[in-house]
Length: 129
Image (cartoon, rainbow, N blue to C red):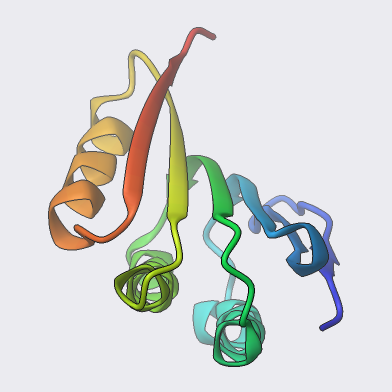
């Protein structure tokens, strides 16, 4: 499985999916012009990895998004849904959710993820800016 690295742009996050290390990272802001196009390939690659993965080691997902629009929210739910399915099948999936301690919106979205994707091992991390 080929790793994915997409550098951050003004409207899209850094994507660093190291499938070989079982480390997935999203960092920055997410409001790309065409969210389905940007996220589609990422989600497809993730699903491809999940379908073929037979290892039992945990998958660690680090998410540090300062902002994302509604279109990206839908795509993020698809991404977390795929990870939750993997976790439901017996693989530990650890979601580290990083948020600015003063940003209630990002914090609350993380809490919603915790409630919706109960098979993920959710860890929230307040960050001071």
